[in-house]
Picture 1 (spheres, rainbow, N blue to C red):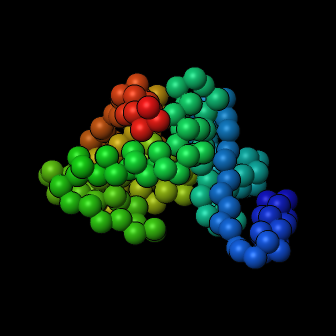
Picture 2 (tube, helix red, strand yellow):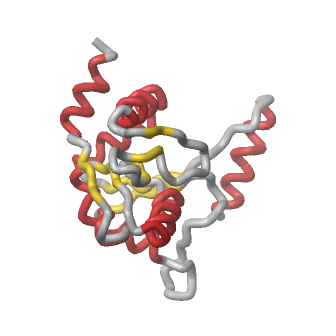
Picture 3 (cartoon, rainbow, N blue to C red):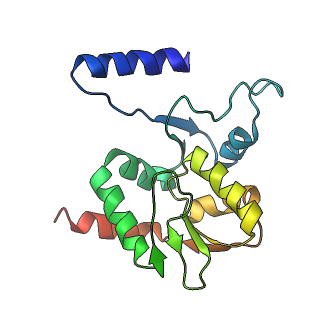
Length: 175
C-alpha cells in the first residue's frame, strides 16, 4: 500500500515537471508507541510495521498538546531551518550531511544529535552510532526525553529544548 501511494504521488509530481521527495508522518496516541514502532520488525511479531526505505523520512508525531511545536516545524521549513541554525550555535563544531546522524560535536568533542523532529530512520541511526561510540549529546523537547532515554543509550547527555522559548523565538520573525 505504501509503495503504491508513493509511486502515485511521484507520478503526479513528474507529470508537473519535477520529482518531489515525499516523507511520511506517523501519528500515535503516546510517545511510548513510537518506541514500539522503532522496535517492530514488521510482521514477525504481528506488528505489521517496520521503518524501511519506502519514504526518505518517517516523522513520528504524538497526539498531545506539547507536540504542536513538531507540527509547526514539519509544516514550515523556514522555521525548521531557523531552529536548526540556532541550535548549531550550541555546538563546538558543526558539519552535517544528509545521511550523517550527528549535527556536529558538543563542547566535549562528542557527537551531538538533533532528535527533536522524531524522524524514525534518524533515531535508528543515532541508536546504532551510540552503540558504537557510547557517548554523545541528544537534543530533544522535554516531552520526548523519557522515551528517547528508554530507546537510546543510557550514558548519553540530554539537552532539553525549552518548548515555550522556541515558540517565542520562532514567532519573533512574524512580528
